Image (cartoon, rainbow, N blue to C red; front, side):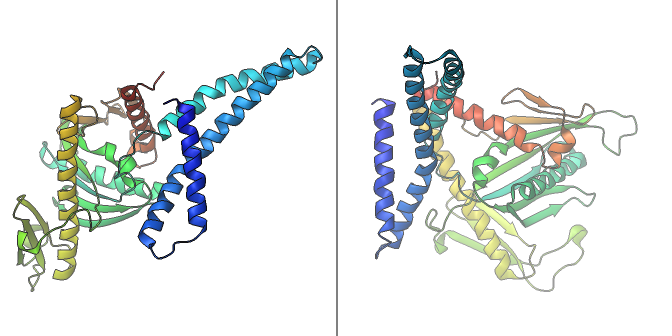
Length: 361
């Protein structure tokens, strides 16, 4: 099927949806919501198609104008300049439409559960994990997202063993999914007297947050234990059994939550994290099956891979997936320049998918 035939079908579908939605939801609100989302998703594609067709018509009109012997030289010069601009615009519009037509990750619009854990490197790894967690908190502010702390296990020296948060907003997973993996830091620890650079690591997991209907969890599959929560160093021991540990028996996934004083709130947060982990496990299994079928591991999201290095002495951050190095470590850790990395990761991902579909010129 040619692209222009596909464009006609998309325009026809968009107009049809518009007429259906204008008539109102009727008795089936669920179907109406589904059609509304399809209409909203089609809108940017339709706008790009209209822009392309307008540019193509302008090229035709200008070409005819230039071929007309009655056109004076001044008008010909203006028309020729405009024609050249439009000829450069056409490939950009076509590429934009092809990108918009790429299959979407069904989880892209989801909120996420962010998990950051200290890796190898002792106390320095814990400090780096805390830096990363703050970076994502600041990035959420920059993007206008809501960042909610779910749990944190601190080291007592300003670091964290692990920290979990919920990030809510428009298209959170679409951008944050590229952060999953092993992050490495190279810097001189404050405790290092000889000035020797240490290398430490932390792992980041970004899990799309599922809806209730995505993951059905049977009560019989859960083992729920309650116990008394304790603060750092065993201090501030609660006098009630408010901490909750939930074990999902079929998968063996265990989630502990003790940050809230209420057992009910801790259980709700633990279930939220458990649901996200089970959903991601199912997504990863399905992705692995598809990858095996096409014998292509690109974009599999393997978290064992070292994805980025933060070198403090040189003030640089290097993303190893795209061979990108930015000398903006402070701005990146403030969340201000993180988009400069993520934007290129998205562009590379799109280029790879276009190449696989055979539509990248």
